Image (cartoon, rainbow, N blue to C red):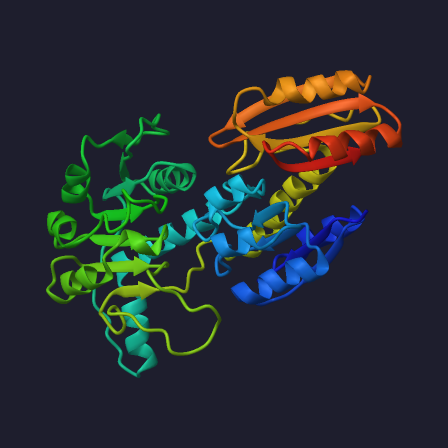
Length: 405
């Protein structure tokens, strides 16, 4: 049977082309779908996997009403738009592309830092209005300035290395211990980083700890000559407090690529307290919006989806145990997703023994509420059908797939 994919939000054609080459049925849309449309589409066409970007939300309601769905591909870095817990409990694996657009985001941050230091966007806007304002006052090189990176992960480290090549002093703060790259050094506290940096850039995930982490108090720690850059998540910065800090000259400028509320589609009517403020660069969530990044993301996530359906491989999964699945050793591979409770493996092995089936390969991994079992067999189609039927009788089973070799 062909695997059915629904790819939304204009996912790069390399991803859909790859899946089509693997004999999948792929339906594509440039737009995001509403909750009701997603549920109706999945159920009416028995969709196996849905691919989304940042505008489409896979909510608990969608998950609970999408019985045929086995996988979600987030063709982006973040997965905040997906209810990961509900997907896990329903046996729906979620993949993303955590590394594919890191360079694109890092380059945007560096370019915005230089633009803020030279007030390029502000002076350009004046020139578009016919105002010629040539002066050196308030314009600086970034060489020998300090860049403070909050969140020293895949993107933060690349930003740091690029900044070092410009002759900058790089410091970082992270809640977990991270090995410094290049000549960067760790800051003992967030306050220390904010109070000593000429530029502060944010590269943290969205969670309870990071929501609103940069507010009036934190902005008050910053130098009046410093600039803030946020290309991480819109909820991390209190936009109202940032606008007030810029109006009152508490900080010198900001570059914001992500916002607490973002439009679902392109067009007018975007609103923000930051509109029209001097030396503020606003971009419409384009950190990873380069041809290179979208190609990489399309290839990475589509490959993860294909390997999951072909082999049961979950190496790139966000909410499942990470299993690198070997080639199938036998006629069939059983993909058994079950509640993480004692006795499941014994129950499955007992049934297999009763049916007189020989096991060629077996792997069991668990994560939080689920167990993930792969088993390879040599057996005829009749026994495969009987095994599947009897396994489905268990109240511990969440989802079952049988892959033929």
